[in-house]
Length: 490
Image 1 (spheres, rainbow, N blue to C red):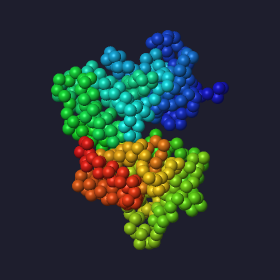
Image 2 (cartoon, rainbow, N blue to C red):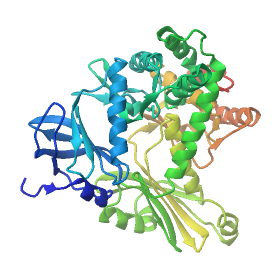
Image 3 (cartoon, rainbow, N blue to C red):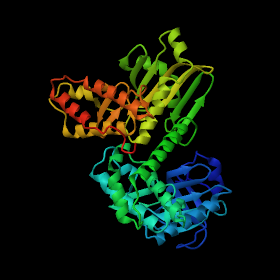
Image 4 (cartoon, one colour):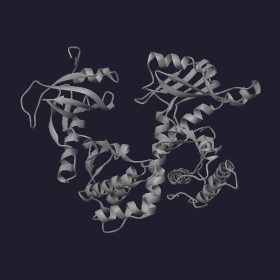
């Protein structure tokens, strides 16, 4: 305990991402608690925007609290005032939010707000299943009336995402008060903002949830005091715009240095890896991907791709190496993005859409100047059998797996996504649903006509995995025949 760092707001600002844990701060107390020289000890970071604000679990006067620290030299006071103003708006609207315990100055080096710690809480993001179920339905039955309640009180949360709601003992708490603002008084603008605000949060659900859009509209309407009902077309238009914006933003994020990713770019190598995989052992691992692919257990050994199972720091990983067959093949591939890069981007598209794939860890392209050579895609290993191994010899598909397959194919329709190589061994049957692998031929189509042709090829390829006379074939054939033909929000 003697080695705990004692920091102030300026030091937190200068440390950027390298904040030591735990650390202590001297704060000037106000609000419920009075007096100076109080001490705050932070021991777990919950959210962190470097050089701007930090949210952590902390101990204050022998109680556990959530501390929100504003540390930017020029913006801290404004951010602090917005936080307090947003809390007051929620309080007046009677929207349940963790109790504000105290707030004040970080001894003239920023500001802090301390909130009640909610025990046994999980975010809505953690509670929403990949395929709609009863638990997810209950979450949405709590969430949508809260959004309507805010709108009824002429307020909205402008950064309305699923991590800003905590579920504990069947109660839903709204957090992140700094993004709670007043709605405009103009009725037309207010209605437009309501569409945009409601669509913002609904577009963050897995895309398969779009099939429940009529239920969401009815639920919102029953809790709203709007005289004119919202219409599906308006909500769909906003949802599509939000989803496209979110995908575009995330694809940019996974190609630059940020809180989630690290980029290494040189004449000989381009690499992006998740920030949690950055220790010296991991750096050595990235430097030896070629050797690892050669020496490790082979999962696939083809001319254009080699897939191997390996590990680093006790984590099992899959390396997919995209080979260069000959000089002619290199001339064809060297000037355009590698298939590994396509996998990397598609994996993150699927993440935004709520479609499962093994967690991407890193992508690496060997380069000569800007010309690409061999490329590597690294993902976490999922200990699951593929659909072909499970069902080729079985008599029938389980009811749960039929629901999972229906959810996966429906999500593909709603996202206008074709896989390009829909072999059954490219679908893993995990404990938490189906997971897609082999993403380098995947495409997202703008035109419905193009998607329909590509998806039909996927369905035919999927059916060829099974013997036509088998019960499994008939089950999957019926399932595919009853899929929606186009997106719910097309």
